[in-house]
Image (cartoon, rainbow, N blue to C red):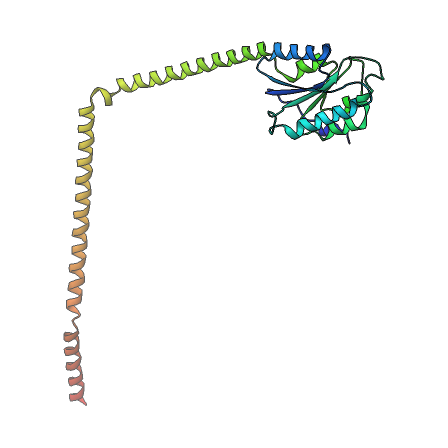
Length: 252
């Protein structure tokens, strides 16, 4: 699974810190520093010096990758991407990037790794394990950072679009304020308030009449119920029943 494309991660679009795992001497490191400084002068660059050729080179490269992962955000700034590589040479010169210890160090790295070994025609196992394979170290440096000129141009374009949008919104707000200022509410506020007061008074009168009509209807209903109660007084009903009983007793 070391070569599985599904596990490869995308490179960060705007890295703040780039680590170079390479030889501190020679033209390769200078070329990468020049490219990084030209394209993105705000980038922090860390150089982890190690051998990239010979018997102990593979262990030094693996140790560099392990160290950068362990100390990122601890004793070091947060490392966003690692470039591991060297210039061209014979198969024997590049062989340290074919060693299993280097392949597994790249595989277990939590930081995205760019392999930049040799020239465009050179391939190593590190190229297949890395998250991204660059044909040369200079191309690797160009790949991991944005072009500062293009980035500044994009920022200016976005700033211009934002300014245009803000001006358009301000014009819309000003038009709305002008409309409100010319409306009747602002031109004749006293008249509008008087109309509103009249509507409030009319509504109050209407509510008062409705309540009075309701109270009159309830009063009439109470009177009707009271009359009905009077015609069915218990003492009168009892007196009537006594008369009926007396008449029946007399007949008996």
